[in-house]
Amino acid sequence: MVIIAVLVGLFVLFFFIRHHAGPAHLAMIAGLSVYEMFGVQFTEWLHKIASGIPLDLAQTIIYLALILVFPLLLYLRSHHGGLFGILRIAEAAVFACIMTALLSATIAKYLPFDSLSGQISNFISSIEGPLVLVGVIASYLDIMLYHE
Image (cartoon, helix red, strand yellow):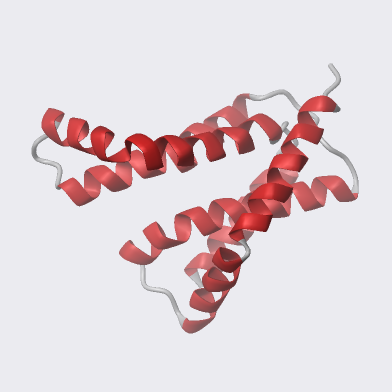
């Protein structure tokens, strides 16, 4: 139920708060790239600064900051508007699915999944590559079609 609640919550957030999702989506992809390239160094740095934090928790904090917090802040601070109609629904669904896929391992570490949530998480993770591609295309469309 946890993964379903996260997926539905993110979809509702991205659909009903009508902001431009393109920059936030690209920031999420960039955050993932930064984490994969420099995550170990950031984790060690955070662990040195706050030695009371366990290394596993420091890794989770850095990951959530790059994948969830910074993209959501960018999304909530962006201008109103974005794609419209069926494209808006698709963009919100893709953005929610990708973010859920990226967060599912972290969520599973701290909250147990039921069998349905596990199946949904596995399915979303199995199509993560094509979802990222569709999301990047939707992000570029959102950025190119932006009007003030």
